[in-house]
Image (cartoon, rainbow, N blue to C red; front, side, top):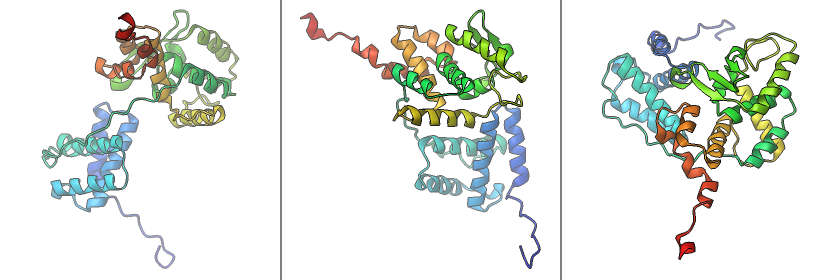
Length: 287
């Protein structure tokens, strides 16, 4: 604003390139959220460096990533920043500016898993029928939050107690199990719903719920239930896998239900299954 006259907004540096980058990500099959995060980090980098893309050097990227780390960026954020810049410079612009920059090491903390008692307490703290059924589906089927919010009524096979996840992580479809008790409750809920929607869970105008809405529902329920753990939609997915493993289910079946392409990803649940460890008999008892 100058003398009461609004000045034109300055266009972000390298905007045409960033717009093209977004289109490249979409064509490559990346999710809407990944497109948003990658382009955000690339824009942030250019704002930091103040350089046109063709003049960027290795030192500019190292300085940017060092600044992110100094400001408290987590391991997962640092890995995401690296992937965004790597795709932009290497795959999109075909520049070798990141050739010898190593990917930040990412820690591997054990997943947060709720006990069965905590799951019961969490569900009991949710008053809304829709919200409770949604959280039950997350836990009973091991869905990712986006898979739950994108679930359509036509993808439910209630008679067979299964559902089809369409376009999950990696754009893969997969079959998941659904609870028998949940089947009866969802039938009543859908029959009583006073609006039309293609989605199993939606707003009253029929549109899809956001993942932020689900996260907020869980945060409120966790506080009401007095659970100290950080409960997220992924915590329920972790709990689903761990409780199946503790019940003696085959780990390869769990791998398929979760949609893991690599068994090693599923094997982390062998480290958090305390009931399995308790069943191991000490060799001293056999002396």
